[in-house]
Structure formats: structure tokens, C-alpha cells
Length: 336
Image (cartoon, rainbow, N blue to C red; front, side, top):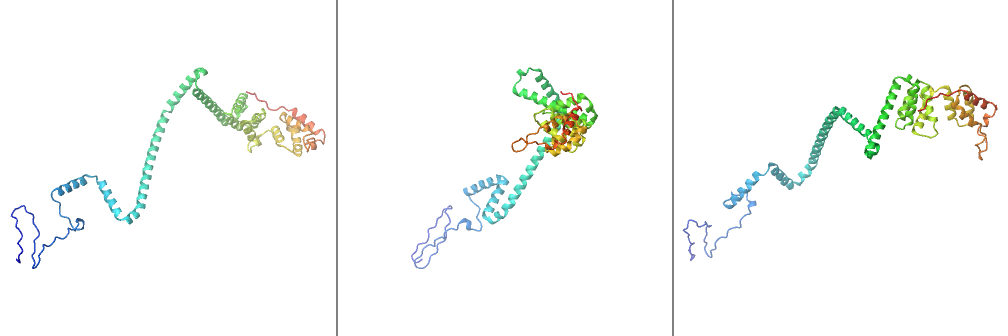
């Protein structure tokens, strides 16, 4: 029509279908197909065919074989990436849930350890007699060997064992005295207490046992520990403190009370107030404390003044007191 040749027809069955061509009057051109719409913009995608279908099937099989947790995590990640506001709201809650889970796991862990340690303690208590027996055998073997054949560690083990044995002995003596304070009348026990007081490892137990003795013996023994040596130690300091304590000081004998007052006095008037008590009750433990009062020097700017001028009148009072205390014997103890 109008000199335009009709389109060629293809008879092959495999020829692809083409869009129809419309012929207009005048100059006719075939309508051009519109550009294809991107697949993502289509409301639905037709099922794939051929190689594309096989690729899709492989991907589907791979996705179906993936762990459910991984797929869920991926979907959650995509969702939160597309909705940042939701992620900001859920983050504190997720952190709180994670913290609670960690705390519960920690509690369970510590509970398990506590149960295990309790079971171990029970087992060790059951095995304690056997362990003590083996330890005693090991110590006996070490003690049987010559000291020069032992190394430093073995010597330290023997020293610790010996110290613990001494402390155990002192504790036993203290328990005996506390159960029966009258045992202090035994000279052998008095000597044992003094011996234990000389050892720093057992002095505290010994002094505590002395406190428990029947008065005035306990205070007399404490005074012996304090004054029989010129050197200071933890034992002498503790003995002095116990003597002046509120519960031991009243248990001192009148003779010991005089000595304690003389040791605590500092001024001349204080010494003068004690002289009548010393004249009546003092014993030899107060003699050297009174003798130093005869000195007429040691005070003032040039140390030539009499520190005890108030004791010079009457002139024979101090002398008579000294003679009186010298005539009375002090308690005597068998020293270790």
C-alpha cells in the first residue's frame, strides 16, 4: 500500500516472534520498542528460564541449607540497616539482656566452683588423719637425719614443726591452768610458765596463763617476768601492761602494790605519800626503788639540786622505810 513493500514472512518454526509493524500514510517507520523497565521496578518478576532458572535453584538450595540462625541474623541485619531508628531503640535493651546473661553465667560458674570446693573440703577432712600420719612420718625421718645432711627447705620445715609443737604445748598449759587455777601452787608449773615466757613463740600463752592463776600468785609471776631482766622485749612490755590492767592490778598483794606505786611515781610528793605504805607492807622488791631516793642531785638547771627534798624531813623516815622493806622476803620462784 502506497508503494511500501509488505514485511517478509518467515516460515521457520523457530523464528522469534516480532512486534507487529503498523503502516501509516505518508512516510511510515516501524514503532520503536520502549526501553525495558528495570526488574526491581516490576511488581512481580516472572519465573526464570533456562540457565537463569538453574542458577536460582542453586541459590535457593544454598539458602535452604544455611543454618537457620545465620539466615535469621542476616534478615535482622538487613532490617536494622534499613531502619536505623529501630536499632537505636533496641541497642540498650540488647545490652541489658546480654549483661543479665553474663551475670547468670558467672553465678552458675561460681556456684559450680563452690560446690566443687566444698566437696574437696569434705574429702580433705576425710583424709586428714591419714595426711597427719604421713606428715608425722616425714618429720620423724627428717629429725632422724644429721642436720648437715639437710637442705635449707628441710631445715625450715623442721623449725616450723618445732615452733608449732612449742605453741601447742603452751596452749595445753594455759588450758590446764584456766581449768584449775590452783595448779599455780606447784613450783614445777611456775618454772614451766617462766620458761615459756622467755620464748617469744610462747610468751603470750604463758602470760595469759599467769593471769588465770589464783591471786596474788599470777601478779607476782608477771612482775617477775617484767623486772628480772634489764632488756626490754615483747614479753616484758606485755607483762607490765597486764600488771597495770584494771582486772589484774586489784589482785596484787599489798607488798607488790607498793612496788607498783613506787615505779609509777614521778614527783617527790608522790613518793612521800607512798612511804607509810612501804613501811608497813613493802618487801625487798621495793628496796632498790627507795634507795635511789637518797640521791640529793639530779634536778635543776645544773643537775645539782635535790629532786627529793621533801623526803628529808623527818630525816629518819626514808631510812626506816628502807630498812623495813629489806627485812621482808619477796616471793621466790625456781627459774628455768
